[in-house]
Image (cartoon, rainbow, N blue to C red; front, side):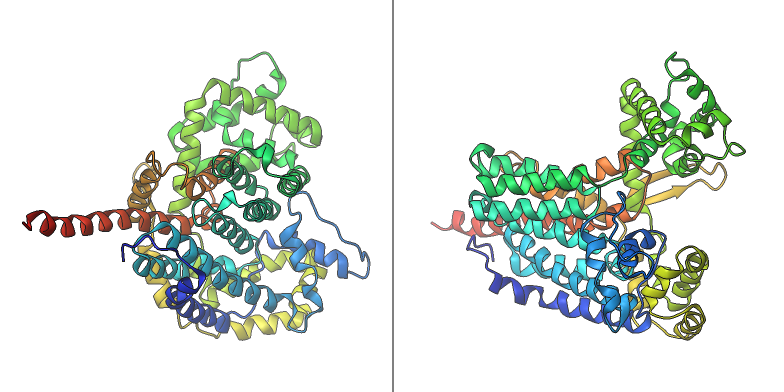
Length: 505
């Protein structure tokens, strides 16, 4: 069990089989109860490109800056399928999730000695994660992002594989696919490139194909992501730190003074309350915010420049508070249960779906017609029928969700103040992360933690907390726990074997 022999794909498959079977059963139960994917608040912007292509009024493809490239492109051909996007998308994403389990098993087998123990454990945990399972059901890019991320790390296995130029090219191409899925994939891409430099050698000798993959990633990242939104979100993340007395941009500092002073009243609680200030800062309605700021918000380029200037000044003057806000928001995201367990109950699923679609039938009617392949009266009948179904796996998934907790968000019932405490899975994952920083492992295991760390830090530095941001890195928590316990168990086995040998004459 402690052999250093080579790990092969043929060895990996039977070790992943329990997770694949259990994961398939849970996904079939969910699909039987909820055959249609959840069309959430972000779904219309992802599905917009497909709607433009198949609309009789447009007939052309358009990718918005915020939702551009890989995931919207994958949705474009789905309206012509007989089952329609509503049923096809969750089916595709659940199948992709099962394939991702095999990639996770391959990584675990290459990073642990006790493979026959840890590969099944890690993959089963990933297979039953309610968080991962739910986002395969929703029309969002998280399953594709997760699959591309796992593929990228898997291509770097076993450690040292990136010395092969062909493997390095596919690694860089997979990292570019991560960046092409979501704007915050840039952190993953940067971390992967930084990991490749010591593992693959001098970048100047990587060759034209590898540099082509880097150029493709640079082009993707330069043409995706909404800059105005990023600057506005960065200002909302630094709002209580803004200097109100500086002479530059004085009219705008005075305009947001009430918001800044209100945010400062409970400075340590700001990460929990950031969302309400974010909405106010982005409002161009003079009745809801100072008319000077409302006027600025309607001038996109100037608004972006002012937000960025105020945010940069705040970060420069208070770097430690900014770092504290960022890491607190990461902790809140790991503590956030979201609505995914409730939505695995068909009654709650369609209750929330009807609430989301009440506006969509007026604002995005053509999209919903394409998505469900039916009209609004038929949709109402569909919703009523689906509510009567039951998810057989819900009790099991609810029990898993109660125990698979990384952080706990506590609140004082009297003062209303929040504070975070780590749970045992979070503590073990952190200790596993620390073992990866040991001198002999730092470079070889950097691909395991550096891309995910840069992703989490960058997205939470700009935006507020969101459980979606941690769904795509949760599998790394399981893997880090396995790395830690593998080292402990292996050391214990060595000690047990050493004692008899030392006592034998």
